[in-house]
Amino acid sequence: MENDRRDAAITHLVDRAYDDAGEAYTLAAYVEWAGAGGHPSDVFDPEGRGYVADGLQYLLTGALCTRLAGHDDRGENRAHEARLVATDQRDHVREHPVERAAFAEFVGDALVIGDAGDAEGAYDRAAAAYEAAAPDDPVEWATQPPLAAATDLLQHCSRNTSREVAWDDLHGADPNGEKYLAHRARYKKRVFPAVVASVLDAGVLHPPRGTTEHRSDDWRCPDCETNEVNWTGGEVVCLDCSARMESL
Ligand SMILES: [Zn+2]
Image (cartoon, rainbow, N blue to C red):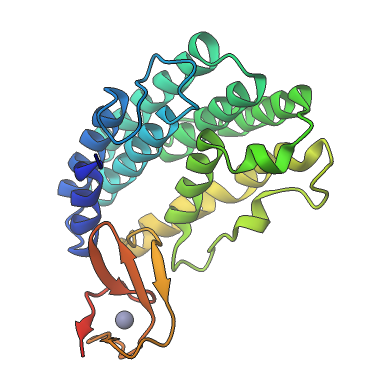
């Protein structure tokens, strides 16, 4: 079982139909939270490994799409909704302190995308929560569902902008240090507002990076003629400009 709404949202991104992408991403979040998105857990399951964060990633991406479509008020509503779900997870559902810190990080993300003020304070609280949690295996935590979804959100938004973010940028220099995970929140505090501003200025959100193939013999971009391929959400698009590729 896959989350078809997410695939539909990616098709709308390729078409640069941001109103439709905003709706499809919002529905993808609801599908995920109902436990029908391909993971065997719903939004109220504390044992569910935190896949509820995938829904937050989708709803916040949908909020940004809706702002890109020119509907700031509706996009801000969607970001506010994401913030309330993240707060509920942080305070009432998640049991592990690292997971609670990850949902505190999402509160900051929602404030940035919703342009709703004091994201800096929210990221400071998330950084403090990561430091207080001090897990023995921070690198392993960084790849777990809630943190991975919060990473994907930033990396997706930054794709093909002048502020493109690499996975290593987001984490601290010492993989065993207590600041390894806290660095995520501090880095986002510095960088995410500029990433969102850059997407809104450009008027383009590229589809997320999926499986890639470099120097393909089978595909060519009709727009920029590269043969760098991005397979994402059922689409085959140019890794650089996100036009649909031509099969050779
Ligand atoms: Zn291209």
